Amino acid sequence: MFYNLRLVYITTKDKQEAKSIGKKLVKENLAACVNIVDGMETIYRWEGEIIEDTEAILIAKTPYHNVRDLTKRVKDLHSYECPCIITLQLTEQEGNKEYQKWLLKNSQKQEIDYEVEDVQPDI
Image (cartoon, rainbow, N blue to C red):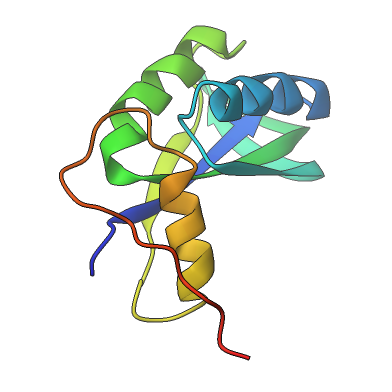
């Protein structure tokens, strides 16, 4: 079965902001799980200037049907005028199937038109 899962890559000004946004995304079932990577160095152009800074990375794991609401929620909570929020589609034929089903079950913000069955791990 195809679950249409996504990793949503988000940058934040610091770990505290990433943690605050991440907790809300999980609490509101917009993401099953988030990961935070602190201390990323970033170089970018903003308003004609080259900026060097540090940021935190927030990676949210969610199905496609949550991406629009998740993006809106992050934009509402974020301190940046133009936050980085991009998605990467997962290759579902690879990786841990049990984890993929867990991800889907734990990020059901809206009704979906298919059932996710319980899976027993291969032992």
